[in-house]
Image (cartoon, rainbow, N blue to C red; front, side, top):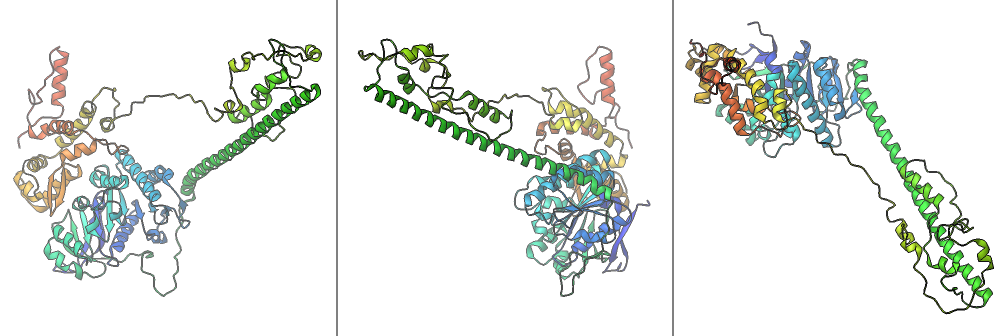
Length: 633
């Protein structure tokens, strides 16, 4: 068929010893792989060999480096090395995720995403999550073969504990990425700790030396007990190679990587870092612009925080000065009263119907200085910057009832006051204090009761977010539309068209998987009327698997996967928790299955409905009425 391959090693045992081992490039880039083995067994070397061979052919990839081992590739290849370390070409965070995905897919730039140097693990996981989201979203449109290489994958998709958003995104790539051209290779030294759903879905697996009992049990369940008995005896770099495109499990010795081995155990020899290739300055500048913009934003935030602190300090200073002014005014009033009583030789009394002014001043609350209050309000509202200055003299030009020293607002002119002489009379109950009935605080404490409150005007807007079904269909919907109404037409039409475009033998194999469950490609091929030849059956089965209609379930068997494909295709990568209800999913599956279960051509129902509508009749409800049956073999 002329399929492009790379040679990664040779068969080391058995009758075919010395035969070169070739792996198909497209299956590597778009498939799901798993490389495992204990520390020092050669698993990272095998992953690096695959990466080197792909880079030699000009293909791009993204290596998620959790231990800082992959920078050695820069010894021979121009790779963009980004992460949280100063040794990287550029330090990045989740703000850079979209640009990283763009460089990888649209500009074909190989990237090492080094998350080994992040002190905060959550920052590293957030960065990987956002990069994976953007890669998945872009690949749905570009459909360009591209591989993610993830070291220590058990830390992200563990078998035991629950997964966070990062793990769920990697599982999503494993299940649905192949259809869009996005592949993933997981690497781990503890297969027992990796989620089994991921391992059993892999198209190719490399099993290097394992010694822990729990890990060898996994080998027994996946490969068989005879392989579990020998996995502890594997040499360095040697592995059991199991692939979806070959029926045999071979013992393979991988080549040694050519580039600097940054993951080798340190020895007593002097460490010498190799000379590394530099990437294009333009690429770094594109990412650097994001970093500079983020730094400017952070600097502006710090500047605003400093300004806010200065305003708060100025407000506190103004409040303190205002409080001191109140104390001074009260002291001046008491002193004036004492002096008047000393001069007259008796306590001050009131004339009929009127209290003396000093009596009124002593009883009434202190009013705030209008100038000082205006300055305080201006600082708090941000209309002016805090400035140091003198508070207006509280004892000059204003008194307790808010009037100036001339008495303009009191209703008593200054000449009357100067001519007034105290007159002895019976004590008279004071009239109601006009200040108590006036608007405004009754005392100084009330005047400041709301000084820290800020009125805000809230505006609520109701945005109707698209649902999962809208994302699957690429259409917007009305607020009352259901998920099935919006997702049905484009998703059903597309999948039915894909099935209708398959060869007859492939459709019959799909029907067999649906009716009889897990089976091998050879058995399904024979049951569908084919020869059962391994090469032919795997070639036909690959067309079903690449479209997601069947899935590998272990030991060479595949199973019907259309229901899970429909459910997954209806999920937005940025809303992974929102899913179609089971009844709506089953309804979509039933409509799609009508193509090969009931033999309906994809466009027949729609054409019949259009004709009926044009004639003023009713639209057919039964998808099998008046349609052309599936062509007989």
